[in-house]
Figure (cartoon, rainbow, N blue to C red):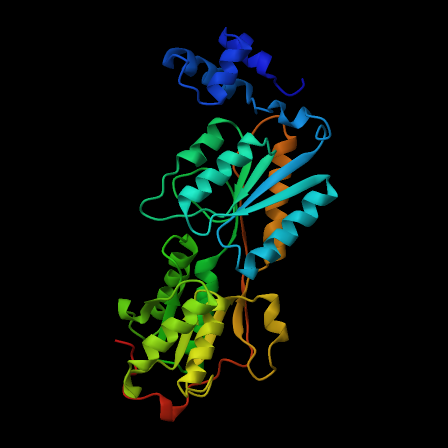
Amino acid sequence: MGRPTIQDVADLAGVSKATVSAVLNDKRTVKESTRSEVLEAIRRLNFRPRPALRHRAGTEGLRSVGFVLREIRNPYYSEIITGAESYLRERGYITLVAASEGDFKAEQRIINLFTLKDVDGILLTPVLDNETDLSHIFDLKRRNVPFVLLEEIRGIQANLVDVDNVDGAKLAARYLIELGHAHIVHFAGPQYSLHSEEREDGVRSAYSESRLIFSNRLVVRAGDSLEAGYRTGLQYFRELHPDDRPTAVTCYNDLVALGLCRALQELGLRVPDDVSVVGYDDLNILNYLSATSRLTSVRVPKFEVGRTAAEILHNEIEDAGPGAPRKVYLKAELVVRETSAPPNPAACGASTLGV
C-alpha cells in the first residue's frame, strides 16, 4: 500500500479534501467535532501532509530536512551539521539550517516555517526553560512529521540522539579529583539547556563519590560563549582572596573554557600551574592552538551524533508510519592536554574541601 493521501483522510473522515486542508492549516472555520474526526483519521492512517509546494515547477522530487540549531555561532554545531548533511546528501536530501539563538519563540517560528515549506523531517536542538511552550513539538507529533531531538525534552516521547552528559562531566571532575584537586568549581551553561543541568549533575556525582563536599557555591553560571567565559572568569577570580581560589575549573563547553583561560592570563594566573581548566565538546579548533595551551576537554563524537540522527530521521521518513521512538546515547571520553595538572601546593590555600 502506498503513502496515504489527503483524499484517503477525507474519505475516512467523511469530509471534503478542502476540509482536511483547513484542519491541516489550523483554520478556525472548521467545527471542533469535524476537526476531531479529521485528526483521528490522520492518526489512524499515519498520514503525513505533503503540500503542493513541492510540485511547483523545478521542485518536484526534491527531498529536504530542516535542522533547527540553538546557537549558530558555536562551532560544536557545525561539526554535527557536517555529520548529518553527509548522510542526507548521500541519499539525495538537501539540509536546510536555521538557528533559534536560545529563543523558544524563534524556534516555534522556524519549525512552523519548515512545516509550511514541506520539509520531509526535522532535526532539533530544543530550547528549554521554565517558560517554554512545547505546543509546536506536540504539533509535529500530531501531524506525523518525522523529527529527531539532539537533546531530550522530558515528557516528550520522541527520537533522540545525544551523549551521556552526566558521565562525560563526571569523567572530567573525577580526573581532577584524582590529580589531587580538592576545590573544583564548575562554570555552568545557559539555563535553557538540559545539557547544562546534566553536566552540573556529573560534577556533583564525582564529588559524591569522593571525600569532598559539594555545595551550590561551586556552580558559577557562565553561559556558552567565549565572551561569557571571559567575563565570568574575570569577575569571579578577581573578587576571590587567594586562599579561597579554586585550583581547577570544569566548564560547560570549550568556548567558555577558552574564554576563562584568557581571563586567567590577564589576571596573572597561570594555567595549569595556578588553575587547571577542563572544557567540554573537544572542538576541532583545539588541535590548532599553541602546543603549550591546548585544552583538556571531554570529547563528544559530534560528527557521529549528526550522522546517527540523520540516519534515524531518514529511516522514519522512508517508513510507512512512525515506529517506537529510538533513543541513542553515544559515549563521551576525556582528552587530556596541557591545561590540566596536579595542584600546585603553593596555590592550594586554606580551602581544601570546597565548602
